[in-house]
Amino acid sequence: MADPTDALDAACYRKMALPVLAEIEARGKLPIVVGGSGLYLKFLTHGPSDLPSDSDLRAELETLSLAELWRRLEELDPVEAAQIDRHNPRYVQRALEVCLLTGRPVSEQRASFEIDTSHLRGLLLTWRPAPLEERIRLRTSEMLSGGAIEEVAAHPQLDENAAKAIGIPEIRRLLAGKINREECAELIVIATRQYAKRQRSWFRREKWLTAMAGDSSKDQFVTTAGAILAGTES
Image (cartoon, rainbow, N blue to C red):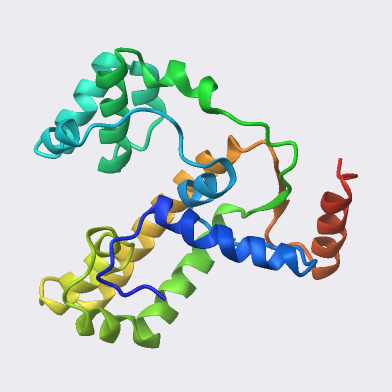
């Protein structure tokens, strides 16, 4: 189990997850991975790309504002700039880093690190806007009333990635007296809704996933999952 102060990322997640999946398979069982982070899932299914990195250049880019990073990426690779999550500094910085190191747009290099996904099977749950909004608000309410505020207060020191998780910046503002609880909840709802939108865009590109309405019945889920595993889904 990781401590909240530990530095964790998609590569660490892959390193921890692979032995667990291998152990499950060794027992003759089927490992099922459930989650919502496209980047972490991508690292698990595809592995890290072999694109270059440079710590000195990365340190230099970290001194730039997000707006400047995106402006420079737009100049070097307008295709990538148009489709990337421009509000995520890590994504923008990494894309710009690759462009600068290779001298080529990162959007042109994607084909070189795509892998065969014919062996992958998965369900992608989709939701209509109204039910999704309702679920986000319910989850936010339950999170705040279920101890999230106290948990954030008990961990003033967090890893940089953990500190950016949806809910933590907002709760910290609440604890600092900068916003009230109602405002905190609404900001978390907005951030979650924006994240859900990015998730839809991300997973739409994963052609190995079978989309299915999230409010389908249990029997429908079982039937569809069975067809996916059997390779007979339409």
